[in-house]
Length: 77
Image 1 (cartoon, rainbow, N blue to C red):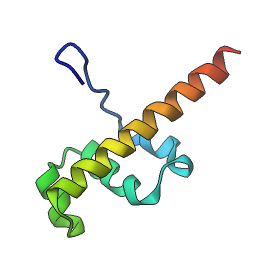
Image 2 (image 1 turned 45 degrees about the horizontal axis):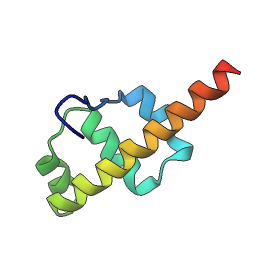
Image 3 (image 1 turned 180 degrees about the vertical axis):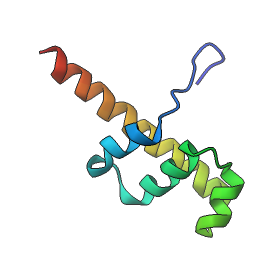
Image 4 (image 1 turned 60 degrees about the horizontal axis):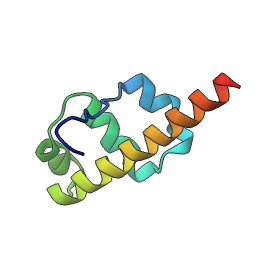
């Protein structure tokens, strides 16, 4: 992501809407992030390394974007 791009932050409700399409390994981390927890706090909560949390959050957010885009495409048809 370059400096002109902004990262979409998803709400707890948006994350829950796509629960069945998100890897369970990412779901709880995404919820914790949406609730305002830092990566360090999330790592401590789930006994993970900070780098692992960052990676899983990134993958989870990517999947959320895919789900949101798919839903937008279907709604426009």
